Length: 536
Image (cartoon, rainbow, N blue to C red; front, side):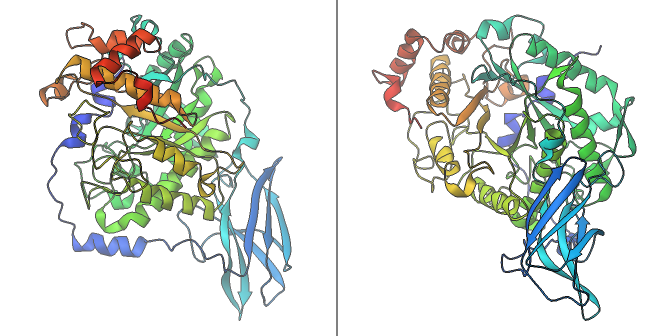
């Protein structure tokens, strides 16, 4: 078996978060393409007919509507549309007499080329001899009804880390008491190789055995140590640019790209790879992955989820939400207990990079609005609350850009409660009326200004996470220093490049001990570190 890809290659590289990137010249033709492909905003609640529910029931889909409108033939025609279809596009799947309340039942067709799992449903009527869209649209919202796996989750603690591939064979994670890890899945590389075939919805897909084999080793290895696994789907650049969204193909300098939700092949392949991974890692011989993150820092448009600036924030959010829903339906239709997270960076009400990044709070609000408009579902939220100045290890220090207010420009572990406060509001609750899981899927501090400052910040961040009942994990970035990051004056690992342990290693190992917490408080200049925490 080939060794794991290095964490430097597949871990999110902090150095790239701070690099200066030159402005891009967008060809006029691309602006035209963006305008031609732009989707309409969600149909207004004032639409004559409202699709109230779309649910799986056995082998069927049941769709119910409310509202009455005139038709030539007295019939409501229910059309199924793929995520990239809108307006008058789609295929009729059922019909019912026009009435104030109508119910449509039709086959799910799961496992076939006509599967309706990833489609949304809208009512069309004939008026004046022409087809007219008479309703809003709604996706299936209970894909878990298909799940064959309901294995217990590995929810054994919040302490997590991005592991170093080079150290997986050691006892380091066990010594640290790690209970969670994250690891990236570059889907471009998965599709680029051969050796594994997967039949899905009437098509055969080929995946790289060399790449998949690495996760076949990782997941059961972690499960065997009672460590929860989170995998992150990333759309990396390969020779096969068809995996990239059409509005993402003009630029080759990004680290990751928007998923292709604008073409049939893109939708089908994203659904297939998500289904394959969920199936392979749901309790069988290869272990269980409990959490899946879709993309990386989707509001960081230029570097981490590239789409041309001409698309604008609305299009960026719409396409990202589609990719999340596709992955959600694929994963939850296999493992009902899995969670599917969206990913945002530390920028909240503002950004230091206008035109390159979108404010996370605005992005989140729009994402939630789009999701609710076409059928609310159980997505969760992963964030990366690095310090405002990424080189500065003192997380507890005041910054006017990271304050305890929803108007704060940034979120850090100092004011992380503003994220959970927002998620506790009614508008952001999941369909069951519960607060969505919040996951610190990446955060770290450099040791180059002093190992004690790094260690104290790490302890503080962990305790903030422990004090907040709505946060379900704290992934410290990273276990081992990255050589390129060190050259750029960043050294966030617990282990030096020569293999020696930093102070942060022993402090993370014993982070729950009063002695370590008292030592961290002394570094921070307070008598009790708990007085600085903002519990929720």
